[in-house]
Image (cartoon, rainbow, N blue to C red; front, top):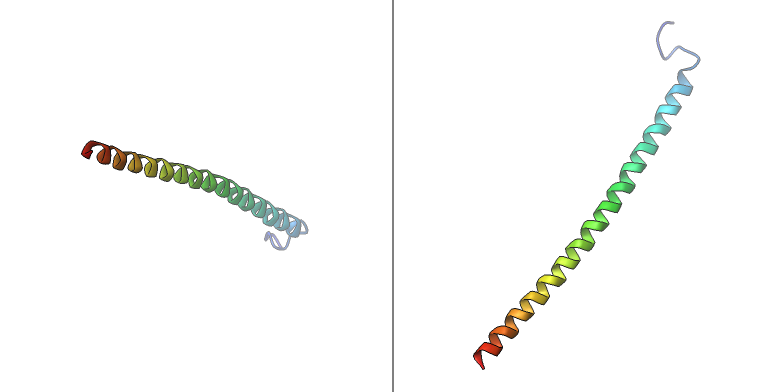
Length: 66
């Protein structure tokens, strides 16, 4: 009975590892979600800036033709 599974403390260690891994996974997921929302907002800002630049270029072309 020198096996880990045969030890009286094994169920406690196993549950601590399972709960610890669940918390670790949840923490990583929350950080990933936060970073993805930051990236998404930056992309939206970049798209808005790009659209404004394109509109300004069109206006400049129209004004240069007049």
